[in-house]
Structures are given as structure tokens and as C-alpha cells.
Amino acid sequence: MTESIKVGGDIISFCSRCQLSLAHILVSLGPDSLPAKVICKTCKAEHRHKVAKKASVKKAKTARKSKGTTSARKLKKEESVQMNLERWTRLVSEKTPIKYSVRTLFKQSDVVDHSSFGIGLVESLMEDDKINVLFRTESKVLVHNK
Ligand SMILES: [Zn+2]
Figure (tube, helix red, strand yellow):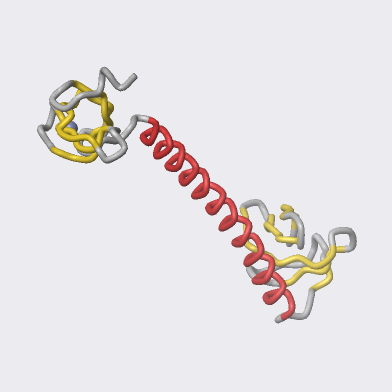
């Protein structure tokens, strides 16, 4: 059954240098009569015989690794949302809320007390007397200075 495996004969082995399963020349057998050392016909490197199976395991590992990176990135994004809420809480607590009215002129980083949306932070001033207000869960464009 080990007829095809003999020293000096051809054997398919995984070459770590070429990163491919290639034809190798069997140099020596191990104590268990299994291929031990081989020479790559492509790059002429002598190395231990490796079955191609290992290559696919390595590939799967790499794939899993990149998947892990993706979820790590996702986690980071969730973290930054958390940070924004912390920042929002800190900023709104620093100022006395101004009762919202379309007649009131708001400035950037003013804190608004809106009758239906609650407490919000004026994130930016927009054209046509509009303000972009960050409420706890959403941002709204409101009219002011009318
Ligand atoms: Zn090689």
C-alpha cells in the first residue's frame, strides 16, 4: 500500500515557500515509513513533507481572523456611539436649557428644552434660520429666530 511512496520518487507535498501543493522528490522516510523530507521541484527547497490539507486549514484560519477584525470594527463603532451619548450628556448638563420657541435665537451648543422632543443640544446653525439639534436619541432640524 505504500508502494507509490519511495525515496527518490515523486510526491505531492505542500511547499511552504511556494505556498502551493507541488510535485516534490521524496528524500527520506520517517520511522513510521511515512514521507519525512522532500525537495520541492519548483524552488528546490528541502523541507519536511506536508500534506495539502494543512494549507486549507491555514486558509480557514485566515478567513476567521479577518472576520474577527470586522466584528472588532463593529464593536468600535458601537463604542463611539456610546461616547457620543456620554459627551451629549455632559454638554447638556453644563448649561441651563432654554425653552424652545421659533422666536428665540439659538447659538451653537445652546441647550434646548423642547416641549415634545425634550432636552437637546444645538449642534450646528443652518441656513434659513434653522438649527440642527441633537436630542438624546435623534437629531432634528428646528426653525428659530422667526
Ligand atoms: Zn517550493
